[in-house]
Every structure is written in C-alpha cells, then in structure tokens.
Length: 298
Image (cartoon, rainbow, N blue to C red; front, side):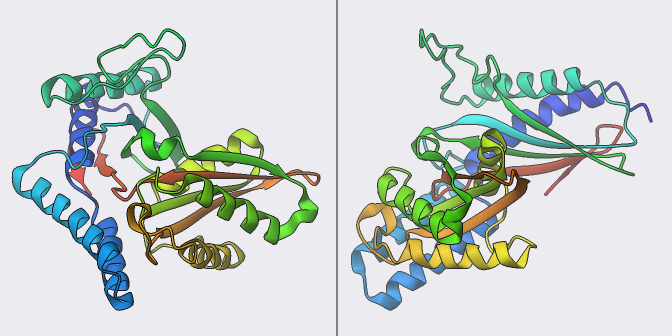
C-alpha cells in the first residue's frame, strides 16, 4: 500500500510535537511511580526524602500549569518507530522527516540545542546531526499504520551507562553484583529516583540497545513476559532500594522506581549485561499515524 505523499510532512510535524510534548508532559505511569515513592518515604518518616519527592511533583505541576519544560536538559532525541508491513514507505524520507521535525522543535519552541561534534565540540544548533536523532526502526506485519515513540535522553542519566561481558559461570548472582555496583557508582548523578534499564544477552551492542529500550520506552509497572526475567526485575528493584541512596542521593527507600529488563539469546561462552539509567522524569511521548497522515495521540 502506497501511503499518501502528505505522510512525510505529517511525520515532520508529529516529530516536532512529540519532542516538545515529551519535555513538557510527564507520562501518567511515571507520575504514579513518583507518587508511590512519596508515600513510601512518608511511611518511613523520612522528611528529607518526602520533601524532595514533593518538590519533584510540584515541579511537574508547575510545568503543567505554565506549559513549560520540566527540565532544562532537552536531551538527544531518540525515536522508536514501528512501520506497518502493508505500507510501502521510503525509509530515508521517514528518517529525514523526523530529523526536520527535531530541528523545527528546537527553533520554534525554542529548545536548548545540545548536539556537538565528539572531537571538535562544534555545535549544530539544531539537536540533529550525524546519527542524531537516533531512530530505531521495526516493522509490524498486517498493519497499515506507523507507531512512534519519542524520548529526549538527557546526559545526566545517559552518562551512567555500563557494559560488562560476564563469564556465564557467574550466573544470576554475578548479574546482581554488577547491577548494584553500577548503582553505587552512579550515586546521585542520574537524579534518582531513577528508572534502571538492563539489557541481557545478545552481543555487546545488542545488550546496550536492550538496556536503552528498557529504561526509555518500557512503561513503569510492567514486567517482562519471561517469568524468570520478571522475577529478576523484582529482586533487583528491592536490592537497589536497599542501598539507601534515595531521592537525589540524600537518603531514602526510593532509589529506583522500576527495574526493567529486556533480553536476547546469546553465545554459549558469554553473558553480556548492560545498564542504562533514566532520571526521575522518564520523559517520552507516543503517537500513531495512518496511511493518510492522520494522527492519534497516545
């Protein structure tokens, strides 16, 4: 099915609006996770941690009322795009539309531009550049729609990314030791309470991609469908919250709101484990387009 030519213009506008929406409107599941954290700190009688959680929730309220950004870090734009298998899309044009939309959001909102050359540090000024926005493409059989998820990945949490090629003999205990070590090393820098994404298996690059998927696009309160993996999610969340790092690193029982794990099969002689952290904002936005460019917001 050949989509309407207008779909590429619609994708550009949607990409612009997703970027802005993600920075202004914290998702409902993240708001609920923060509220649960507040109640947990109140039950512990921790006034410092409770005060921090109240301040975070007040930050969100003010952003809602004034239609302003929740944080000054507008991140690097990351898109997850699922293209219906019935659509005959020009994927280069699709990615170009997303790039143009990010540049428009930066200029029209305006947003703080972050994208620089890794060596010269020369600024593009558009939040786009070589390899930016990051676009992860997937395909959905028997569908004639395009599903988009967008997350602006901030540097404070992104800097706390880790990869280790574990020996298979280290088993589940080795995974737990490594993850908790990463949390201790991160401390307050990723702005806890955090969302911890873990990628298990695959190759080194696959594990890192799975960790990003888990931290950025998984909704809070969901579990991996594999029961063994879901059990590990719960166990790690409990261990991380026992560290006492707490909100903004000042102590408490809410160091993480969620531990999300994604996995892939791996080689018999290796066990890659990656950790990618998302700060308390959990920013993301979602939309869907039909073949004619009509938009449904999620």
